[in-house]
Length: 211
Image (cartoon, rainbow, N blue to C red; front, side, top):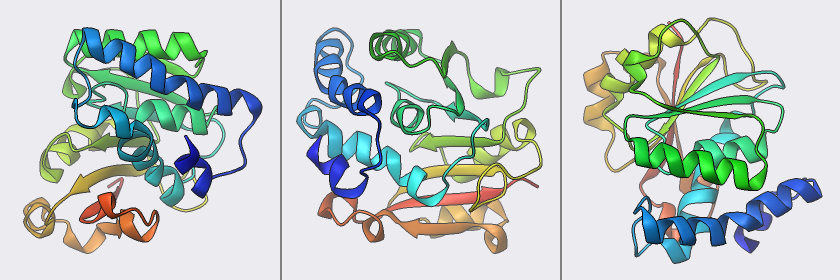
């Protein structure tokens, strides 16, 4: 928990309590349903919560923005972002029902009222649009973009970036970016330049604007 406060400080008592509750809840649920690597569970706040908040550092969403988390797994980056932005609406989607159950149970336990968890592949989401899509290590950029571009509406619900995809990626991104055919419009930031922990080396926040 302290590592979150190393970089962010303007939290309400409710937000602080929500962040604090995550550790026990994820440890409890991880015993039942493995949603976080066993070797990572003791580094939950650094490797999962803080990592998710790199998106908040790059793209602070405006009040009233609507965000979809693609392939949220156990709720990352969606749950930390929903705590961070209590006036932003989040839809957390995953095709694996047991993971969505964990997301729903943890969201309910900490009193997150701005999260809807749905058991669905992103390409099956119909009838609604969003300002931003977020994800963490779900699929190649070209696939992510093909799935989410139709779901994102034009506009700008952040002081920093127009509506689009903001995702967390790792490793060498050159090939992924090249394969999109959109290299000229893609921006990437090293997470290690935002948070100084060595575990974030070769990890990036990648942004693609709505076309």
